[in-house]
Image (tube, rainbow, N blue to C red; front, top):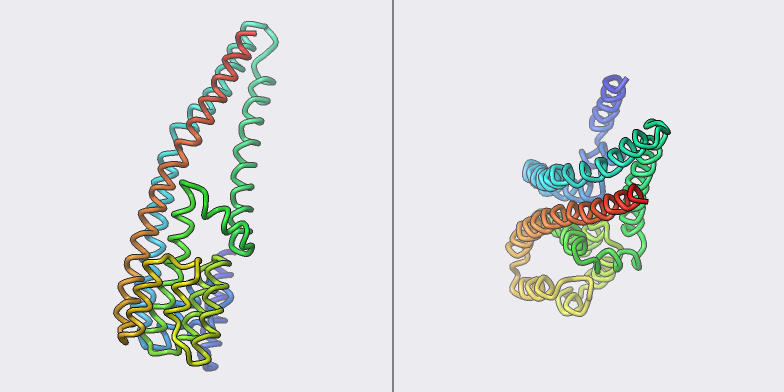
Length: 277
């Protein structure tokens, strides 16, 4: 079934390309805002290979951070399951009331908590891509905020870089980069700068006053714009932003297991206290 769906999708892409659509247009339904922005800009500038190479680096860095976090989660999750299983088994044996029911209750409660936390986090992060107040809230979380901010900036910088490199209008670059950032505050600031540059005004001075942009990024962008070196600056910014996003995602991945470990130890202590009653 999956193979048939993939074959059908491939046929659709080929038919659209034969009809004159660009790669970005043909694949648009299956692309994220980042992929759409990078591929469209890279294709227009004749840099499609470089665009796909940048996307490969982006997804590779995300995969490494995710794998490291999942590996580190194994031990605290083991502690949590042990805390659910051992008291149920010991209590069932010593009270002659049976093991199965308390075991299922403990494991069911644990899994319900874990699934609920996962679903809640997915919901909040998804909503933070659309709601400025939640964007600000997630950005302020000590261990998660840097990863959230740097990831959004990395997406923004990648699309901006390929637009500048392909010689497209700065107004279009800001509009596409803002959408690709998937951060509402950064997107709103970018759309304001898009309208500003469309009217012929420079972006730099206003960009410095936009709190959605890091001060260093805005200052370097303004200097490069004034010196006519935006292509060089945006290329460097894309690389720096990708590096910063990778490092911050790895750090967030290190904190998550620690938080789960503390919660697992609290759960274990609670189970021990229940056994002593």
